Image (cartoon, rainbow, N blue to C red; front, top):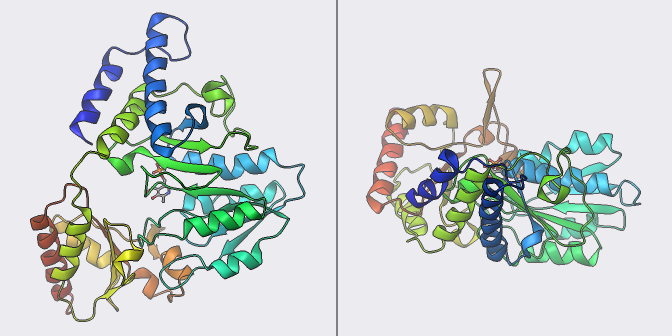
Length: 357
Ligand code: PLP
């Protein structure tokens, strides 16, 4: 976390213990601090103050977007929901709930780099579609989606548009009805997210109780993490940003003949992302070797009950089951030095060599 964020949070962990819903002075101070964070975040989204609701995570915010929209529109003729096939699991895994509520979920196909096929989306849209969910940028590959076109199509169809902007916040002009974000992607605390709900959007809460967050998300707010989210949003805009340079340095230092860059054109990519495959080498094996060398990389392949599951993102892009276990993701922070990027490339090189590549 950024030191400024830790400093901003600390008083709320130590002394500022008042419940933001309480009317006493301690409570009012906590509420003011939360509202200050709401102001910073709504400004940076180009939103109104009241359009931002805090949640416990990006996951909860995305659950609220789809399930909340479905709950509020049960009386509507619109009974289909479209998710891009490469959405984060916090979107995709709402499908069984939506089905139980009477909706049918369909996946929008993507191309080889994980970009939604606009023609397919156009063909899938119709008067029976309630919601389209397409993320701004993919967390695994780093691919940036043609979000303006998606928003325009959804809008022309009278369909709600949810954009998971966890990977790109602070960002504005998403032309979406619902936008979900998370603090830990901008060097803020873990365990806090938010949802932008455009004024007038029909949506119901998925947590009920004390009526906090304008009755949209019950539960006592976590003042410290919300304050940290606001501070991170403020800080992140003014920090030096090395991400693109570090990523490019890393990629050009990699000298492994068989290596394949999943998204070859960096214009299609988030600036801090690199995604590679070394055919025949499982990501898990590479990750273990890299971890021993002090490199924290990841893969989209999930490990469940002792066996690796292939990445749903690579499968959606048309890769085979085996290929979908080979994806390696490297992300670079704003403050990653070029030296560190070169060292990471050397480690990948050494690990590949150990594996006979
Ligand atoms: N959406 C995307 C694109 C993400 O990358 C993540 C987290 O990695 C999430 C949603 C979930 O956010 P959180 O970790 O705050 O639940």
